[in-house]
Length: 419
Image (cartoon, rainbow, N blue to C red):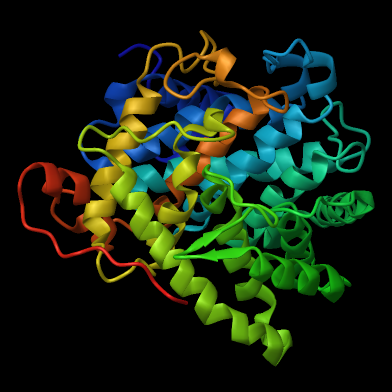
């Protein structure tokens, strides 16, 4: 295979032999050659993570993201969305691959890949938050930046060693300032309140002053939005879409996990939040059809398998409900990812994501969708943060609920919860 180095070539040997640029070129070729990582579900997921990450992080690490990333905006508003789309790509991508970057105990070939993309991620964070960088990103102008500052904060909470502790001091200072600058944005009375709380929770782990009021307001408002059976409204009204998974459950769990110890009042929200999340994960798993499809309902369908953020998050946390085995969730999510990633038109000729649900479908996009938005699909890959010895990866293949049901296999009755 031309221009592709075998996976058993050591990272240090590559550096000695050809230098850093050769290493980047070699790993870039891995992203483009599916036959390099054949076989197991985990290898396919790693291949997918690399395919998504490589164009974004390679360009950003060389301060060329804004110069090279296309800005597809189907509503003829590319100029407007260019103010936000690069932070969208970075924050959303890292929110998804952060657990993999933090994962220990990997085999040598995967560890080399992980180390490479962790290096690129830190270089990217530096470039994105340095006011003198051509890729310096907007964290404070307009409303959108608070969304993606929050996804970036979520990434740091998921990979504190790789994305914070190992960051150089200058980049740490710049990153803190960037996150704090998003405070000028007033979130709407909706899931957006959790963007502010997630940023504050992240700042609390950096030994920075953080605002308990933003956190408390978000927690109590989200509680008031609860409709029952694991489902929150997006604001006072119920929305039939995937925002319970895109944002609400994962960011509420992350906020509470990070700051609940500060106040006994916040601790009391943790168990109900987890029970509700587990119920919604049950619903999500049942939405995955035997062929790996799922209903194209509601807003933001261009986030593709990011619709299963919560299901992936609970699998990664090892907090799936007892009714779901890790391996059936793995098989279900693998089927979804495969259907979406392999659909013709998903990527352009240079490997950038294009807008769509299954393939290239620009008409499906709302006005706030552009190229960077699409990278929220990465949050479906969270279980890569589990080692391959975990039952999620090592357990034998198992049919998921809809496969069992449509094959005539007997099933336990499904029940609502009252929490």
